[in-house]
Length: 271
Ligand SMILES: C[S@@+](CC[C@H](N)C(=O)[O-])C[C@H]1O[C@@H](n2cnc3c(N)ncnc32)[C@H](O)[C@@H]1O
Image 1 (tube, rainbow, N blue to C red):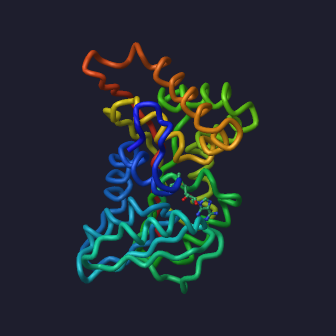
Image 2: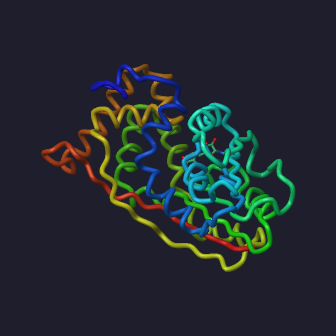
Protein backbone atom coordinates (compact mmCIF):
# COMPACT_ATOMS: atom_id res chain seq x y z
CA UNK A 1 0.00 0.00 0.00
CA UNK A 2 0.99 3.63 -0.44
CA UNK A 3 1.87 5.40 2.75
CA UNK A 4 -0.19 8.29 4.18
CA UNK A 5 1.32 10.82 1.78
CA UNK A 6 1.50 8.60 -1.26
CA UNK A 7 5.20 9.34 -1.55
CA UNK A 8 6.30 5.74 -1.23
CA UNK A 9 4.41 4.02 -3.98
CA UNK A 10 5.36 0.41 -4.28
CA UNK A 11 5.50 -1.80 -7.32
CA UNK A 12 4.96 -1.17 -11.00
CA UNK A 13 1.94 0.70 -12.39
CA UNK A 14 0.26 -2.59 -13.44
CA UNK A 15 0.82 -4.00 -9.92
CA UNK A 16 -0.77 -0.86 -8.48
CA UNK A 17 -3.60 -1.19 -11.03
CA UNK A 18 -4.29 -4.69 -9.74
CA UNK A 19 -4.36 -3.42 -6.14
CA UNK A 20 -6.05 -0.03 -6.35
CA UNK A 21 -8.43 -0.43 -9.31
CA UNK A 22 -9.84 -3.71 -8.00
CA UNK A 23 -12.35 -2.16 -5.55
CA UNK A 24 -13.87 -0.02 -8.31
CA UNK A 25 -14.04 -2.84 -10.85
CA UNK A 26 -15.26 -5.66 -8.58
CA UNK A 27 -19.05 -5.17 -8.81
CA UNK A 28 -18.88 -4.34 -12.53
CA UNK A 29 -16.85 -7.50 -13.18
CA UNK A 30 -19.63 -9.53 -11.57
CA UNK A 31 -22.23 -7.65 -13.66
CA UNK A 32 -20.45 -8.19 -16.99
CA UNK A 33 -19.81 -11.86 -16.27
CA UNK A 34 -23.42 -12.35 -15.10
CA UNK A 35 -24.64 -10.72 -18.31
CA UNK A 36 -23.24 -13.50 -20.53
CA UNK A 37 -24.69 -16.29 -18.43
CA UNK A 38 -21.57 -18.44 -18.12
CA UNK A 39 -21.93 -22.18 -17.76
CA UNK A 40 -19.59 -25.00 -16.73
CA UNK A 41 -17.36 -25.96 -19.62
CA UNK A 42 -17.73 -22.68 -21.53
CA UNK A 43 -14.85 -21.20 -23.55
CA UNK A 44 -14.52 -17.52 -22.62
CA UNK A 45 -12.45 -14.62 -23.94
CA UNK A 46 -11.68 -11.63 -21.70
CA UNK A 47 -10.99 -8.94 -24.30
CA UNK A 48 -8.67 -6.14 -23.11
CA UNK A 49 -8.19 -8.23 -19.99
CA UNK A 50 -5.74 -5.91 -18.22
CA UNK A 51 -4.59 -7.69 -15.06
CA UNK A 52 -7.36 -10.26 -15.47
CA UNK A 53 -10.23 -9.34 -13.12
CA UNK A 54 -12.94 -10.66 -15.48
CA UNK A 55 -10.85 -13.63 -16.64
CA UNK A 56 -10.48 -14.81 -13.04
CA UNK A 57 -14.19 -14.33 -12.35
CA UNK A 58 -14.99 -16.30 -15.52
CA UNK A 59 -12.58 -19.11 -14.64
CA UNK A 60 -14.28 -19.58 -11.29
CA UNK A 61 -17.61 -20.07 -13.08
CA UNK A 62 -16.71 -22.25 -16.04
CA UNK A 63 -14.94 -24.85 -13.91
CA UNK A 64 -12.42 -27.51 -14.86
CA UNK A 65 -13.99 -28.32 -18.23
CA UNK A 66 -13.99 -24.67 -19.25
CA UNK A 67 -11.36 -22.57 -21.00
CA UNK A 68 -10.51 -18.93 -20.40
CA UNK A 69 -8.30 -16.70 -22.54
CA UNK A 70 -7.31 -13.10 -21.94
CA UNK A 71 -6.04 -10.73 -24.64
CA UNK A 72 -4.52 -7.28 -24.13
CA UNK A 73 -1.93 -5.05 -25.79
CA UNK A 74 -0.13 -4.11 -22.58
CA UNK A 75 2.67 -6.56 -21.69
CA UNK A 76 3.02 -5.16 -18.16
CA UNK A 77 -0.66 -5.76 -17.43
CA UNK A 78 -0.39 -9.28 -18.89
CA UNK A 79 2.61 -10.09 -16.68
CA UNK A 80 0.61 -9.15 -13.57
CA UNK A 81 -2.39 -11.09 -14.94
CA UNK A 82 -0.26 -14.22 -15.34
CA UNK A 83 1.24 -13.79 -11.87
CA UNK A 84 -2.21 -13.50 -10.30
CA UNK A 85 -3.91 -16.31 -12.21
CA UNK A 86 -5.22 -18.88 -9.77
CA UNK A 87 -3.22 -22.08 -9.71
CA UNK A 88 -6.49 -23.91 -10.13
CA UNK A 89 -8.47 -25.15 -13.06
CA UNK A 90 -8.94 -24.00 -15.64
CA UNK A 91 -5.65 -22.42 -16.64
CA UNK A 92 -6.10 -18.94 -18.06
CA UNK A 93 -4.10 -18.30 -21.20
CA UNK A 94 -3.03 -14.65 -21.44
CA UNK A 95 -1.93 -13.40 -24.88
CA UNK A 96 -0.58 -10.10 -26.16
CA UNK A 97 -2.89 -9.09 -28.99
CA UNK A 98 -4.77 -6.02 -30.20
CA UNK A 99 -8.56 -6.26 -30.06
CA UNK A 100 -8.87 -5.69 -33.80
CA UNK A 101 -6.45 -8.50 -34.69
CA UNK A 102 -7.10 -11.46 -32.43
CA UNK A 103 -4.95 -14.59 -32.81
CA UNK A 104 -7.82 -17.07 -32.47
CA UNK A 105 -9.59 -19.13 -35.15
CA UNK A 106 -13.17 -18.28 -36.08
CA UNK A 107 -15.87 -19.36 -33.61
CA UNK A 108 -13.42 -20.19 -30.78
CA UNK A 109 -15.43 -18.84 -27.83
CA UNK A 110 -18.89 -19.36 -26.34
CA UNK A 111 -18.68 -16.06 -24.53
CA UNK A 112 -16.69 -12.81 -24.83
CA UNK A 113 -16.50 -10.22 -22.07
CA UNK A 114 -14.86 -6.83 -22.33
CA UNK A 115 -14.68 -4.92 -19.08
CA UNK A 116 -13.75 -1.23 -19.46
CA UNK A 117 -11.74 -1.74 -22.63
CA UNK A 118 -13.98 -0.71 -25.53
CA UNK A 119 -13.62 3.03 -24.95
CA UNK A 120 -9.86 2.73 -25.52
CA UNK A 121 -9.96 0.81 -28.80
CA UNK A 122 -8.58 2.88 -31.65
CA UNK A 123 -11.03 1.17 -34.02
CA UNK A 124 -14.09 0.04 -32.06
CA UNK A 125 -15.90 -1.28 -35.15
CA UNK A 126 -12.94 -3.44 -36.17
CA UNK A 127 -12.55 -4.71 -32.60
CA UNK A 128 -16.20 -5.75 -32.29
CA UNK A 129 -16.01 -7.33 -35.77
CA UNK A 130 -13.11 -9.44 -34.49
CA UNK A 131 -15.08 -10.27 -31.34
CA UNK A 132 -17.96 -11.40 -33.57
CA UNK A 133 -15.61 -13.52 -35.67
CA UNK A 134 -14.22 -15.43 -32.69
CA UNK A 135 -17.64 -15.94 -31.05
CA UNK A 136 -19.49 -19.14 -31.90
CA UNK A 137 -22.98 -19.01 -33.41
CA UNK A 138 -25.33 -18.82 -30.44
CA UNK A 139 -22.58 -17.26 -28.33
CA UNK A 140 -22.79 -13.96 -26.45
CA UNK A 141 -20.77 -10.86 -25.70
CA UNK A 142 -21.05 -8.34 -22.88
CA UNK A 143 -19.02 -5.16 -22.49
CA UNK A 144 -18.89 -2.31 -20.00
CA UNK A 145 -17.63 1.24 -20.43
CA UNK A 146 -17.87 4.05 -17.91
CA UNK A 147 -20.86 6.32 -18.38
CA UNK A 148 -20.49 10.10 -18.54
CA UNK A 149 -18.06 11.23 -15.85
CA UNK A 150 -20.78 13.22 -14.06
CA UNK A 151 -22.35 9.89 -13.10
CA UNK A 152 -19.26 8.88 -11.12
CA UNK A 153 -18.23 11.72 -8.77
CA UNK A 154 -14.87 10.17 -7.92
CA UNK A 155 -13.83 10.35 -11.57
CA UNK A 156 -15.10 13.91 -11.86
CA UNK A 157 -12.92 14.93 -8.92
CA UNK A 158 -9.96 12.99 -10.33
CA UNK A 159 -10.46 14.81 -13.64
CA UNK A 160 -10.27 18.17 -11.85
CA UNK A 161 -7.08 17.11 -10.09
CA UNK A 162 -5.55 15.98 -13.38
CA UNK A 163 -6.52 19.27 -15.02
CA UNK A 164 -4.79 21.19 -12.22
CA UNK A 165 -1.72 18.98 -11.85
CA UNK A 166 -1.12 17.42 -15.28
CA UNK A 167 -2.67 19.98 -17.63
CA UNK A 168 -5.55 20.17 -20.09
CA UNK A 169 -4.10 17.74 -22.60
CA UNK A 170 -3.70 14.90 -20.11
CA UNK A 171 -7.12 15.63 -18.60
CA UNK A 172 -8.72 15.59 -22.06
CA UNK A 173 -7.15 12.22 -22.75
CA UNK A 174 -8.46 10.92 -19.39
CA UNK A 175 -11.95 12.18 -20.32
CA UNK A 176 -11.98 9.77 -23.28
CA UNK A 177 -12.51 6.93 -20.81
CA UNK A 178 -16.01 8.37 -20.21
CA UNK A 179 -16.97 9.31 -23.75
CA UNK A 180 -18.10 6.03 -25.31
CA UNK A 181 -21.90 6.21 -25.31
CA UNK A 182 -24.43 3.39 -25.25
CA UNK A 183 -25.49 4.42 -28.78
CA UNK A 184 -21.93 4.15 -30.07
CA UNK A 185 -21.42 0.74 -28.45
CA UNK A 186 -24.72 -0.73 -29.65
CA UNK A 187 -24.20 0.61 -33.18
CA UNK A 188 -20.76 -1.03 -33.31
CA UNK A 189 -22.15 -4.34 -31.99
CA UNK A 190 -24.97 -4.30 -34.57
CA UNK A 191 -22.58 -3.47 -37.41
CA UNK A 192 -20.33 -6.33 -36.30
CA UNK A 193 -23.16 -8.83 -36.69
CA UNK A 194 -24.41 -9.19 -33.12
CA UNK A 195 -28.18 -9.36 -32.72
CA UNK A 196 -30.56 -8.86 -29.79
CA UNK A 197 -28.29 -6.00 -28.73
CA UNK A 198 -29.16 -4.41 -25.36
CA UNK A 199 -27.73 -1.50 -23.40
CA UNK A 200 -28.44 -0.43 -19.87
CA UNK A 201 -26.73 1.48 -17.10
CA UNK A 202 -25.45 -0.16 -13.94
CA UNK A 203 -24.73 1.89 -10.83
CA UNK A 204 -23.03 0.61 -7.71
CA UNK A 205 -22.34 2.47 -4.49
CA UNK A 206 -18.75 1.65 -3.61
CA UNK A 207 -17.12 2.20 -0.22
CA UNK A 208 -13.63 3.33 -1.14
CA UNK A 209 -10.58 2.25 0.84
CA UNK A 210 -9.35 5.10 3.10
CA UNK A 211 -8.51 8.01 0.79
CA UNK A 212 -5.09 8.87 2.28
CA UNK A 213 -3.72 5.69 0.72
CA UNK A 214 -6.24 5.09 -2.03
CA UNK A 215 -6.23 8.50 -3.76
CA UNK A 216 -2.47 8.54 -4.54
CA UNK A 217 -2.30 4.79 -5.09
CA UNK A 218 -5.17 4.70 -7.56
CA UNK A 219 -3.98 7.81 -9.39
CA UNK A 220 -0.47 6.42 -9.72
CA UNK A 221 -1.86 3.20 -11.26
CA UNK A 222 -3.34 5.10 -14.22
CA UNK A 223 -1.38 6.38 -17.22
CA UNK A 224 -2.63 9.93 -16.54
CA UNK A 225 -1.38 9.76 -12.96
CA UNK A 226 1.91 8.55 -14.35
CA UNK A 227 1.97 11.78 -16.36
CA UNK A 228 1.71 13.72 -13.08
CA UNK A 229 4.60 11.69 -11.67
CA UNK A 230 6.67 12.15 -14.82
CA UNK A 231 6.27 15.92 -14.89
CA UNK A 232 6.15 16.84 -11.19
CA UNK A 233 7.44 13.79 -9.36
CA UNK A 234 5.98 12.28 -6.16
CA UNK A 235 5.27 15.71 -4.64
CA UNK A 236 2.96 16.61 -7.52
CA UNK A 237 1.18 13.27 -7.19
CA UNK A 238 0.76 13.85 -3.45
CA UNK A 239 -0.68 17.33 -4.10
CA UNK A 240 -3.12 15.98 -6.71
CA UNK A 241 -4.21 13.24 -4.30
CA UNK A 242 -4.62 15.80 -1.50
CA UNK A 243 -6.91 17.81 -3.79
CA UNK A 244 -9.00 14.72 -4.48
CA UNK A 245 -9.40 14.16 -0.73
CA UNK A 246 -10.23 17.80 -0.17
CA UNK A 247 -12.92 17.81 -2.90
CA UNK A 248 -14.48 14.72 -1.34
CA UNK A 249 -14.23 15.86 2.28
CA UNK A 250 -17.95 16.54 2.53
CA UNK A 251 -18.69 13.04 1.26
CA UNK A 252 -16.36 11.33 3.70
CA UNK A 253 -17.93 10.15 6.95
CA UNK A 254 -16.49 10.65 10.46
CA UNK A 255 -15.25 7.06 10.23
CA UNK A 256 -13.13 8.08 7.19
CA UNK A 257 -15.22 6.03 4.77
CA UNK A 258 -16.16 7.59 1.42
CA UNK A 259 -19.00 5.84 -0.37
CA UNK A 260 -19.75 7.04 -3.88
CA UNK A 261 -21.83 5.94 -6.87
CA UNK A 262 -20.09 4.63 -9.98
CA UNK A 263 -22.02 4.15 -13.24
CA UNK A 264 -21.14 2.17 -16.34
CA UNK A 265 -22.98 1.30 -19.53
CA UNK A 266 -23.35 -2.44 -20.00
CA UNK A 267 -24.04 -3.69 -23.54
CA UNK A 268 -24.78 -7.22 -24.66
CA UNK A 269 -25.24 -8.96 -27.97
CA UNK A 270 -25.77 -12.47 -29.32
CA UNK A 271 -24.29 -14.26 -32.38
C1 LIG B 1 -9.13 0.28 -18.03
S1 LIG B 1 -8.19 -1.08 -18.53
C2 LIG B 1 -9.35 -2.42 -18.23
C3 LIG B 1 -8.63 -3.71 -17.98
C4 LIG B 1 -9.50 -4.85 -17.47
N1 LIG B 1 -10.46 -5.28 -18.46
C5 LIG B 1 -10.18 -4.49 -16.16
O1 LIG B 1 -11.37 -4.77 -16.01
O2 LIG B 1 -9.52 -3.96 -15.27
C6 LIG B 1 -8.17 -0.98 -20.29
C7 LIG B 1 -7.35 -2.07 -20.93
O3 LIG B 1 -7.56 -2.04 -22.33
C8 LIG B 1 -6.35 -2.42 -22.94
N2 LIG B 1 -6.40 -1.99 -24.34
C9 LIG B 1 -6.47 -0.73 -24.82
N3 LIG B 1 -6.51 -0.74 -26.15
C10 LIG B 1 -6.48 -2.05 -26.54
C11 LIG B 1 -6.52 -2.71 -27.79
N4 LIG B 1 -6.60 -2.02 -28.93
N5 LIG B 1 -6.48 -4.05 -27.82
C12 LIG B 1 -6.42 -4.76 -26.66
N6 LIG B 1 -6.37 -4.19 -25.44
C13 LIG B 1 -6.42 -2.86 -25.38
C14 LIG B 1 -5.30 -1.70 -22.11
O4 LIG B 1 -4.02 -2.23 -22.30
C15 LIG B 1 -5.86 -1.92 -20.70
O5 LIG B 1 -5.34 -3.09 -20.12
